[in-house]
Length: 137
Image (cartoon, rainbow, N blue to C red; front, side):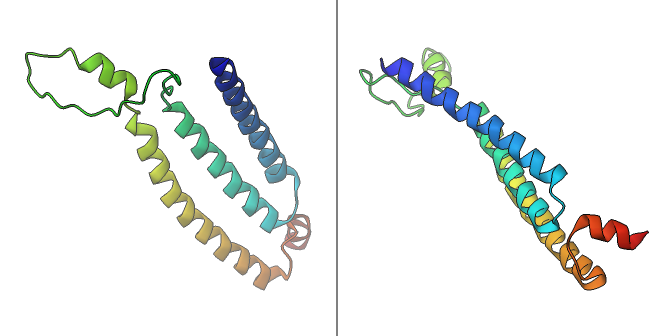
């Protein structure tokens, strides 16, 4: 029963990620307001980051088996019997490093786009992209 529940919850999480991806792409392409586009772009980046974290996820142990942290206590090169257990419990650090980098880059891009929106408003006195396109000619 526990495996079914865990699989069901992860299926719901994955489906909600793809629904969130679809809604943010819809808002990004079909909403004319610049602020809404900026919010949708931020949500899209967060959705991609959550998906990248789920790629590096390792399954948790069953309720009958206790959780064992992935720590190597024996560093002898002759005894490598600990490696399969360590690899099965360790989380992949690459998606975590990529998400950390993406958060920093996303913050810099968001600040730049906010500055661009301020400049657009000062120049055109609107943030409606249809109106800006009409005023531009």
